[in-house]
Length: 486
Image (cartoon, rainbow, N blue to C red; front, side):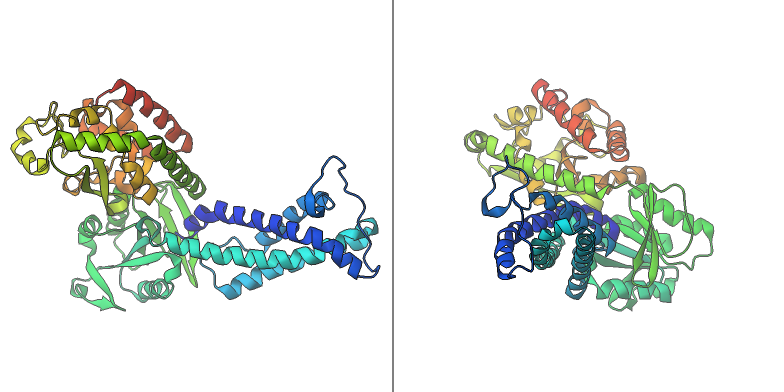
């Protein structure tokens, strides 16, 4: 859980550190000449710029050949002093100490080298100025990183909701550690007890939500990203059932004992202060790739919103002229692990279409809990065209910007559909939903419901950035050909 968030924000922290090194160099290079002049000959003056073809202002070209060394040494010592552990969650005292030690040892290493090789002693002036600037900038960008992580935790998808199995001292201790450290980005959902007499009891303000036998019901009616098992169950079948309940729903399973299970995609050991925890992931994650995916979502959706400005003007006018009612259709959908959000679409049906559905159930052409019919009588005069061309989906680009959705991912279902899912199909809720998916580019309404679900599970099991790119390319073809659109 913690390592996942650390890897997710690592590219951002790496970029900030690169900027810090570059800014520290830009500040110290011109000032170093003044510093050398003030040293009254104690420090040798630098030679002319090492690369005559490079003409940079403020004497930046004078020391340009030492800049790669600064980058190399800085990252070596930042990593050595664990400055990339638990990004965004460190106390300020820890930030000052770790970055200070990294800069101190970088300076000691550099000056030790200069002492052994005197011809390069003219670099001493810039180094003396570079290290204090670097230290201040490294501390500042980590404080800023803390603000970024804190802001991200205001979004539901960045917060990990944890359900604790058992009410043993170990379980209560783990809950207490998490409760006292909200900056970890973990929120307690509650406890599940193996004792019936523990129901409706509270431990430190956290409720017991049910028994282990009723775990499925708790998982289906609560937002849970991870289940933490702290030991105490002697029946292996009961423990296996807990694992099974997590596995079929795509929920992470963590435990504090030595039990291992090969059915999990990833197994990691983490530390909650003095409590060792093993996290088993039922769905493989690569936080750095997820970070890139989110960046691409923001950039691509922003570009598409700008490119579609004519549609933002024309389509609302056509909708208003076709029938009375709002331009946008807003509907609550189910996102990752049961999170609810409001999805936007251009309205393609008459007002009150949802209430009319119960009178059209006998015309449903899809198997399973979804509802689709060809030539739906609820379409407005322009609505059918919007649906066939997928223009009605354009407002979901704003859902992507908000972080509720991604460009690529399983389509977000209605809650009334989710309650009818078989346990295996609920695994499609293990990732953030998207505008397009394998179902969209494979046939949409021509595909049976169970095939649709299996395509979503296939996407989750085999996800990669390249797969997302291929689906986006196929989406363009599917939209132009209107394959399976209704």
